[in-house]
Amino acid sequence: MDNEFLKAEKILNKYKQEHVLRFLERRTPEEKTQLIDQILSVDFEQLIAILHKKDQHIEDNSANITPIRYEDWDKYDNNEQDAYTQLGWELIRSGRVAVIVVAGGQGSRLGHDGPKGTLDIGLPSRKSLFQLQAERLLNLSRRANKYIPWYIMTSPENHQETIAFFSSANYFGYPADECFFFQQNTMPVLDHDGKLMLTPSSELRLAPSGNGECFSSLKRSGALADMKKRGVSWMFYYNVDNALIKVADPSFIGVAASHNNPIASKVIEKTNPDEKIGIVCLKNNVPAVIEYTEIPNHLLLEKDHDGSLTYHAGNISIHLFRYDFVEHHADTELPYHTASKRMDYVDSEGNLIRPNAPNAYKLERFIFDFFPLAPRMTLLKMKREEEFAPVKNKEGEDSPLSARNLVLKLHEKWMINAGIPVEQLLSRAIEISPLVSFSGEGLDL
Image (cartoon, helix red, strand yellow):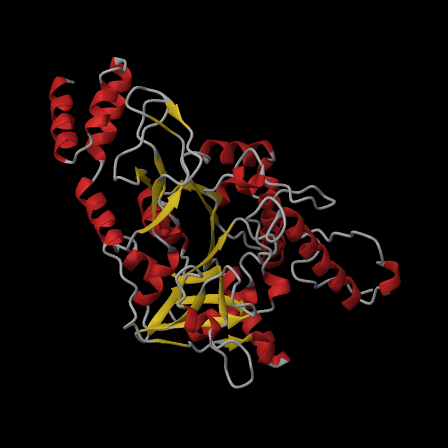
């Protein structure tokens, strides 16, 4: 213990983290051991480099940004749509498709106590996001006579709670051995002076280090090896908080496999320059996403001759990755992005501090930073109202209520298309179970 403490002391002094030493003096032997182990596992040179890059950041006005080519599902004729969809079904039936959901977030911003995937958005069925997604997978699996393996990426703060939720619901009818839970990586949280932050439980404050850690977490957990053993060739990736997600959409899989680029991504028309989604484009002639907070104003407002936005391919985080690409890049170093957040912490005296304004840097990697590593990618433009109902805010836009309304509106459209008179649907909130219909099929009178 003394030897480990001396190592930690030397490191903390070297990197000007003496406040942690003062905190250590007041800890029990057990707490000291735990905290020292954490300190010795931190890559301080990496942290310094990340902060230095942030401080030296200058907007790259020299980057060559141009629109990216995309496919439009609605421009395909019926024969083409059927052919792509059948190819997707063939891949599902042959066990070549796996599904990854990134579900490490908590629902605290939404006023929900628990993992975001456990949220009930207020549908008549009161089903959680996880249940809706499990039942869509069940629908496909039963029709394909082949279960699709489901890899659920959690975070240390919600891992056990997520597993318990699935277990208590008997996995929503999905086979437990087709569900693989794995935890994403974490990074230390730093205050605005670059100091390590501490928690009331005498630990370093850590935070999930972004969805860009997904591939390395898959490898570390053994999930990537599990996919290889199963013969998976395509990974369908999505965020847990999209209430309209068509999990393992056969049509999308067919388009991706037909073009066979390492990455495919669904996009939607971005009609409002101020909408808080990034754009997919070419940056220096390779695929890239520019986040909405980083889009230069002249690009944000640029329009084509017909008055539509030039950069309108909106990123909604629905992707397909070829297995060989992921295997090759699982350990590739991606850049870290710094986000300023408000975070509670404990000072060196052990006092809990609850700041009123952002005081900390969360360090994250993003999944779309893999895009430039692919020489080409396939983009498929889809209808927004059929694909995207995000749950980000407690109220208003992108809230549980707005997502609920989008789901019910789509189901109403399905019923009208199936021949049900509009007057029978007035003032009624009718939900269609994913076990009955995946995307509007099977409802004809």
